[in-house]
Every structure is written in C-alpha cells, then in structure tokens.
Image (tube, rainbow, N blue to C red; front, top):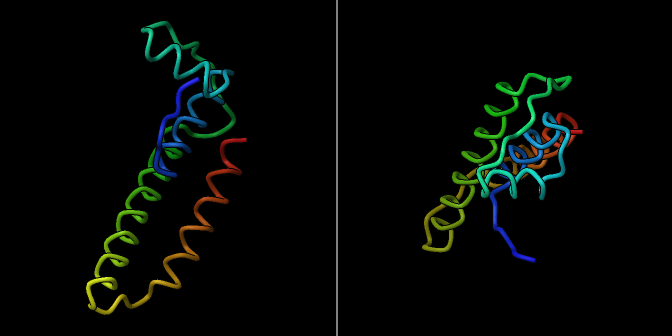
Length: 99
C-alpha cells in the first residue's frame, strides 16, 4: 500500500477518469504508472467539462492558501469565509458529477 497526496481538483479528476473508464481509482493509477492501456468508455458526463471544473477547484484552493498565508503574516484576508463556502459547493458538485 502506498499513499498519494492530491489536491481536491486532482482527486476529482482521477475519480472522473476512473469512472469514465469503468475502473476504480486504484486500478486507474496502477495502469497509468505501469503504462497499461486505459479502456475507453463514454461516461454520462462531459469529461472535458469535468476537467475544467477540477482545474477551477484547484485554482480556488491555491487562492485560499494564499489568503491564509496573507492573514498569518498580518495582512487582511477579506472574503475568506465566502471562499470556503464556494470551495465546499464546488467539491459537492464534483462529487455529484463523478458518481
């Protein structure tokens, strides 16, 4: 067993790709690492759109991290509460799209 750290956006992307291929995330990662073929299977969602949503989530996480760093250094971190709500809503949306 190995542990892999991913951002929420990366995790959502792996789950979406695994779902689209009819694989578990673990099997998808094994196949990617070992250079094995990933079965092509069309999901019920637009994988390209899901990829962009995942990138948005990743960017929002980076913004939140920068705001937290600014706050720790004494600079104001305006809007941090709302950003957290947006991140949570995006995470729920990504979960729904990848089921």
